[in-house]
Image 1 (tube, rainbow, N blue to C red):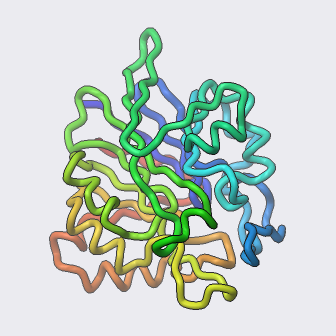
Image 2: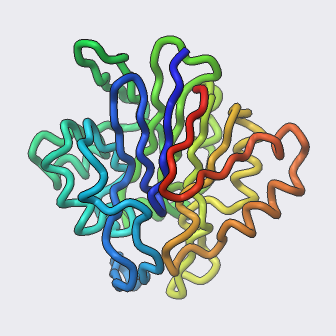
Image 3: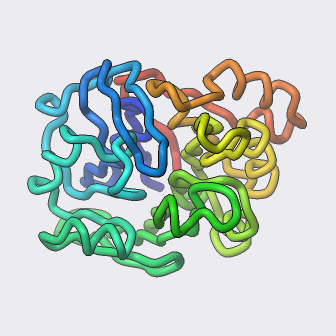
Length: 263
């Protein structure tokens, strides 16, 4: 059994420490106040800076980058961290854009982090669709990550990535036993596309947790940006109305503080 330490830095950015490794998801370290354009008439403003500044982060062994082409998942300060990271794992298209040894994975491909004296970690890429049906050519590829290592008590640590809930995501619990789910939420919408959603809503998070039955469900990617339309209050309401076997799985991480749990 190996405990894992999780530190929510803001938005989609989480520091994962396990088995001698320090892994970082979707680095976003720009200060608050900036405006960003995501393409096709979409954009947002950053409302909150990181809970830990990039210079205070310490060494990073690997970056798990769900996608490189939207600044709310990889901003300028986050991009500046990549050369110092030992490994960058992302989409196949993203690896082509980043170069410099970035490793691209298609859904269900795997890679392994290994080093003497450390727990080997298998990284399984999981499917994502960052919008409604047919949106992939416009919004680009995204990938999630499931982390597995020997001795896990409850199952894999799954970072869903920026995705709506659709059939391929529903199939993830059929193929993997999920112990901890880091849920990218926010119910992202943009004025240009009206009611269409680009990340999971709180209601979808409840549905996914009923399917996956993780030991622990942790909301991330719900605060800090103007285009996030469902914050913590909406997520809390949805889980409060969920069946008891789902309601009891949610855990909130304090910003900038390490929380230890059993994976």
